[in-house]
Length: 284
Ligand code: NDP
View 1: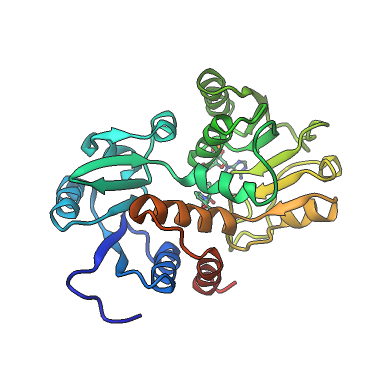
View 2 (view 1 turned 180 degrees about the horizontal axis):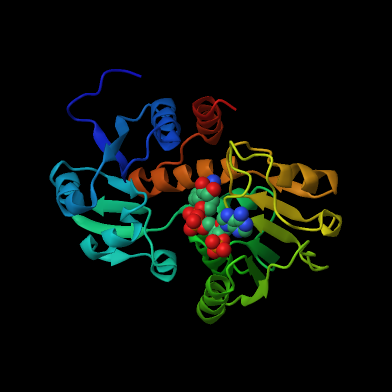
């Protein structure tokens, strides 16, 4: 990577205590491979300084920035407009700055859907999603907007799962319902997309997996995991053994970065280069 020039266009992440952010490696590798004079930097921003950080990004001509927790919801009050899925999700992870105007987007779910498109069209999918947190919410809304036929939310905490199911059902074309997560949950026959959107299985707890009856994996279904590290979680290995198509959280992360770069610069970066950069950053 060459020396940063004064005129480089800037992008980056506003986060707090994020430590080593693998998105920096993905974005920088993508911009460099495309010979673009654009940089991506990780900025530690305390909640009380968010407003000034946003003003600073505008003042310095940034193309935009990512927000991670705790800024994903509070950044909303600093924006001029919000994309449809970000509005429905109620959180923004990507801000685009154009002519001094700030637009908020949520690309978590878009990254998932783009990764899914490498295996199947989301339209008509009959999906089961485990989890009802930020990742599950983004994926469920985006799948609904992309034309999924039905979505079943399965979550440990019933109230959270119920609320997400009602929200998706009311705001997208997909039929969405909640099912309590009983012991050895049996995946319904006919379902063709199964998503782990919980944090179960994330390194170093990679021995943990979902309380699901693995004999019910529907053969031929796409089975996805949001956990990027390790890429092939116990969940995905079991699905693959059952004749399903595994989709790793690495793909979701890389595709999210691709969507962000496109929003900021209008360019499509090289997915293979970014994939390799992520693997190197995570040591996988
Ligand atoms: P949240 O804390 O918002 O939600 C966590 C979810 O996991 C909740 O539904 C929670 O259930 C469930 N959960 C956690 N532990 C258990 C358990 N032991 N048993 C059953 N359910 C459990 O987290 P996020 O949604 O923000 O993140 C979830 C995962 O997604 C993380 O690992 C994150 O790194 C990953 N992620 C990956 C992305 C990618 O691009 N690959 C992008 C964004 C996130 P309950 O409601 O009952 O507490």
